[in-house]
Image: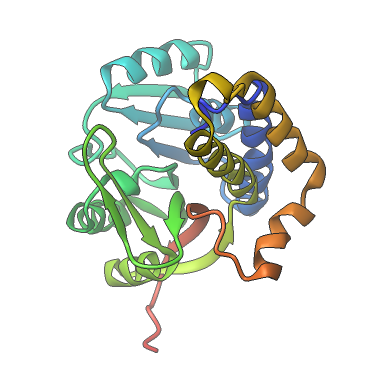
Length: 250
């Protein structure tokens, strides 16, 4: 999300480390002796993290040729990671799963495929198994983008409705604060690039300045838009902790 904004390389590391602490807290009571299914693994950062977190087995599935190559290379040192090159929608798990991790996968699927995927995963969950989703979100109506980067940004209520329709219980929802902080920077840089001509953008200077201003001003800088009643940033991100169980009618 941070390419082309002039942020230092450490920005990505900062966000991932901060998100890792959130995930560790959310999974504090999860069964670590079981299997993790990481669908849409990308280059394998999260698969590697789960393998390091003492999960007995991590199954990482990725469909992109380029991403899978990087995933396989990153995960090669870990004997408890199995990498699979395949379509996440057609993949069939082979046993009980303690944790299904969907780290930004659902936003690339239309609603029908989201529901089909989640309903297919439910029978494979262990009795205390959970599904952890990490998805980019919007505040209002669904935003669908096509072209070079086709994606569907849904609101938290939209995801709540979809999860309920699938028969899943939403145990917890939490704003991904590190993501939101970095997204504020991305959107500020976009505004700057729209105002300044390429000749005067100086991203090598402006990028680090924006990044460190956000880092040093956190958490107050995130509270300022709310205090002023400004819906900023436009794009957010949330963690959703899901489990099976009886759905309570509202």
